Length: 290
Image 1 (cartoon, one colour):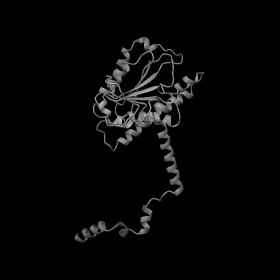
Image 2 (cartoon, helix red, strand yellow):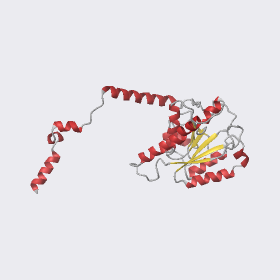
Image 3 (cartoon, rainbow, N blue to C red):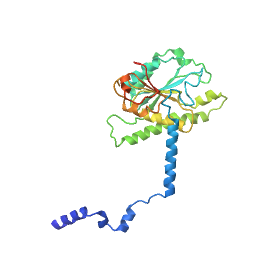
Image 4 (spheres, helix red, strand yellow):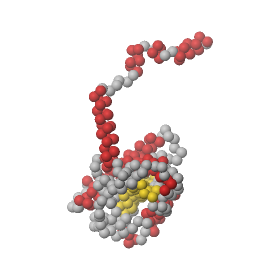
């Protein structure tokens, strides 16, 4: 037994090039791509990064370069607003913000909530029950008859206490779901429509929403990614508004730090939350909103 043990220890301690033949080691090393393939991949990567940097909102001005900017396009028609309800206090805060919007203009509402968050979906339905019926059934544009609210359940990017090893899978599923519902499906539905519409209504009809308001957890990231998929290809896309939670007094949440550079307007309710951060003209602090 001692002889076997000594041989095993010697096998472990010896360098691998002395244990295995050099010819065998060559089979264990995967072949490297050709120089042309490497240059092509690097060129594609640089082109993608350059395009993303080009479509990012300008942090030195509040003017958005997005084709569907609510500031640059004056419209008399109604606005379709989508709100991501982040559960718990996030949901309550966002519903308070929605209650302050003019219902005659923002008379089409889409509520996004994470899978399993029945509290938020029920709160959204109760909120709609409190909206006067005149705002629920009257629209100033013939193209949008019988406007009503919608609820859309989005797979969670990461559940509470979820393992970091399984998070990439749930994040990928949430991302593909958002790409389908927010980017691809509205474009496909618009392509099947017939009829004459003006240029302004034409671009808006292909949108999931004119404005997306967020203040919640990590599922905001796939939503922002789906919107940037449209912007990457120069297609009309929703405006992105992120309102940091009232509970974040001295620092920003992780989600806020991730999406701040990508949203069209970033709102905080405490000035201490952005102290020491990079000056950004798109960041707004108007005091308490809820």
